[in-house]
Image 1: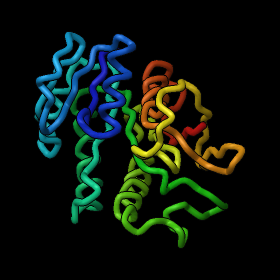
Image 2: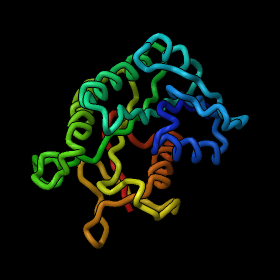
Image 3: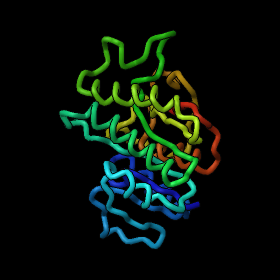
Image 4: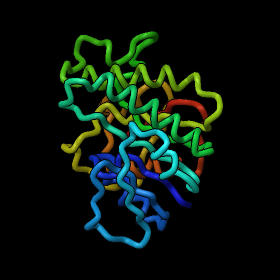
Length: 216
């Protein structure tokens, strides 16, 4: 398959790029600052500012699937606004490019931990992640009105960060609106296995116009 990967130099993007190439997919790697020194015949790097919708749409031409791992930056003081606006522009560019399959990555904050209660709204939720989590939650609400694209929104496990050292196991369990917990009541997944989940979805297309999640 030919897959466009937006945000290919970020924490999740790097893991996705590695997984895609290992599975022999042709990748259009889109980033503000492409890592041109990483030469691979399967990767075509494209330097694109996602705020330029027409430019991004042009870069997406001819791919089978778009995977969006855009991150507006956790230390960005305008994180909430920039994430939502950037995500909307990416969504628009996918449509302008005439594509259908769109997989986008949000956060775990919008998962429901009790009826009507989302993780981000609990007192224990870390305030340093609140802006990013609410932005991803509110973008998901916006995306749910999208009827033209065959989209899927992936919420990672609650614990999915550089400190998870499990590596790539290829093992995971799927859920939809609620976190997937293990026997120790932890929702946890390595970034390498998150990449496995997302590339599996790109290949198998199990989720259509829904949010899903995954953990061990």
